[in-house]
Length: 73
Image (cartoon, rainbow, N blue to C red; front, side):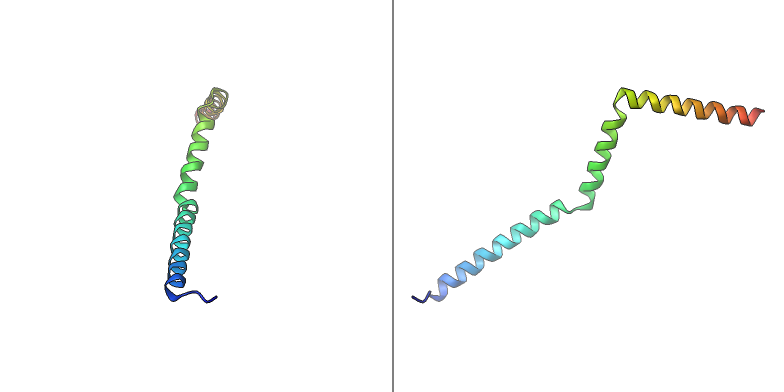
């Protein structure tokens, strides 16, 4: 049984709409700014950990002390 032209056009339009929705979702997921924001959030989460924060403060203080000592020696 042959389908009428209106049914075929409706199917094509539905396929176009589904493809457009899929492309929109993919463009949101592949947005580079999304990856940058996720990376920033991950780094900030790590830096807010007290163990990491205090270790970085200690390393910074040590480097500062070494530099000051070298300058005034």
